[in-house]
Image (tube, rainbow over all chains, first blue to last red; front, side, top):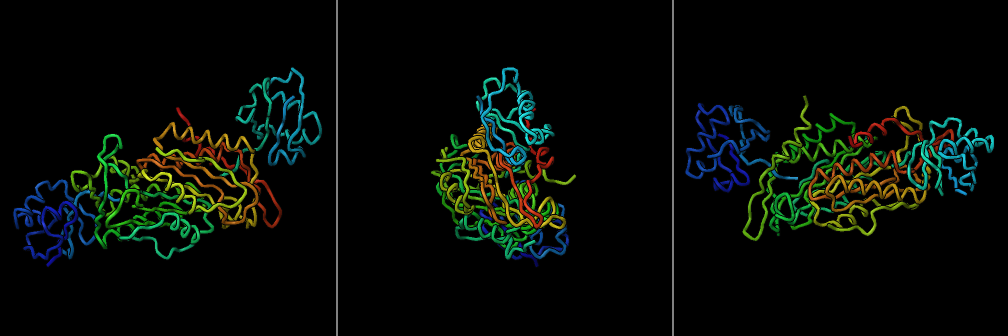
Length: 84
Length: 84
Length: 161
Length: 161
């Protein structure tokens, strides 16, 4: 089981801020997880359609889409940050 | 007639903060003025001994020692600034 | 060296930049130079007031937990690169009105160059790394602010070779 | 654009940096970025606390008239180089105690890069151009502070090609 978090425009597109998921062992990387999540609903699919625009964090650390999710407890997806 | 001002360590060496002087017409530049002032007293001479260390301003504008003092009303001598 | 009681604060209520500055100075009486950056909510959209629609309100979303962690990591990085006596980052979340302070970044050092560079570094990296997102309300509704490539270029100046 | 009531102030009495910051922000509510530098009197001599003699007092001499003129010229130069909504320079004169604020420099702009660069420029140029001189009192008496070559090098970064 892992917690997936969505923020800002990604959250609005998915329609959820958080969900508990249990992907199969074949989901090894962030990219794999995006593919797997995108198949969950049309809203997920649309949220991840421009995946190049989406940033990810594993256990609250920025990671590239090639990063492993093998031991992840919390994976987050969000647009580029705009604070400050 | 012109007003000559001294600040900080230069003032302490000369022993004056200000004096009115009337140099001859041959005193054309700041360098000439320094030579002329240095002859006024031993304290002046000592104050201007390391003239490379002394900065000058003509009518409240930084100038090099080669600058003219022909129309100067106020000439100031001081060490490098250390404010801020 | 003065260790600050709290170097990172994210708060949903307004803060007073002058009071924060004086508190920071009081913690750091022996620093010769203190550099501060304050970001305020702008009342127009995009890069230019002449062309940008008026903005009446802003909502600041953040990733609780990671935001504090990232700001702490930025401070650690700054402390590794410069000699700093004290550092502070305060960031708003929640609903803001025009002119409200959004962010307060302060760096104190014996010497001004360390303070000035660290302060600039902190705000540049914060802009591209700290998980905050702005949503602006204009006459046509509320919309997420787009990240700008210019911020990435600024932040990249601080990448190590 | 907000025109400040007074961009340059030299005063022989202490000032309150937090109050000055808030007054500056109040004058400039539409600026997105405000960069501030505060110089405080250090309680040790020279570059390093470990090796520098303790300093108990400081006297700041200045050239009245020219000091105001130079600070005004620095501000004009900054306004020519960056897009600024407001600028402020406050400088102490007279007798100071350790931790007393010496200088307050603030620059406000729609965008942070202009504010940060202008603030850094102002303090760098002020250090080498504004006619102020520090005299420090240590256990062995009072002595004028020597100018450092490092300040000249910093200031030269801003020379135009």
